[in-house]
Length: 209
Image (tube, rainbow, N blue to C red; front, side, top):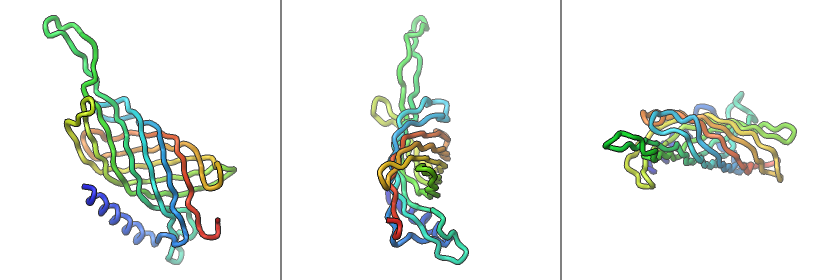
């Protein structure tokens, strides 16, 4: 499965470069971002409530190579990884004799993790703030467990749309907030939103150092 995901990411990368007339900038260094927050607005009747969400991304700036292309537009492409908690399923336990409620217990828990191809636009900077928008397409693995023991899993493709805004700290880094909408193509967990604190180390281009 890992080999399949890697091949799919490489194929998408070549397609993006071919369609847009972009190639990685030879003199650019990558941008690295990490985020920690939570998942919420989880669809699906069984599991809800959300939970912690972690992610990281590594993207490389692109440069236009065709006349009339994107020119100096701030575009970058790369990969992201993520692990998101979808929450737990709670059931009510009843007395088999009287039918009286004995309370509620956790009957299951759901995690989503995977890797995706990411396309970023930005940063746009103003007054020390930087805005970045992104779109992703990739692999989502959905696994259900009871007290840590996985009892079922499902693989899915999906996409994400997001944005982050950060404040410049020391030169070359920002700290801010990121929000992202995830749409998965399966019958278990169809969509959810993540919100997180994001730290970003900005790649550089020749002449901007």
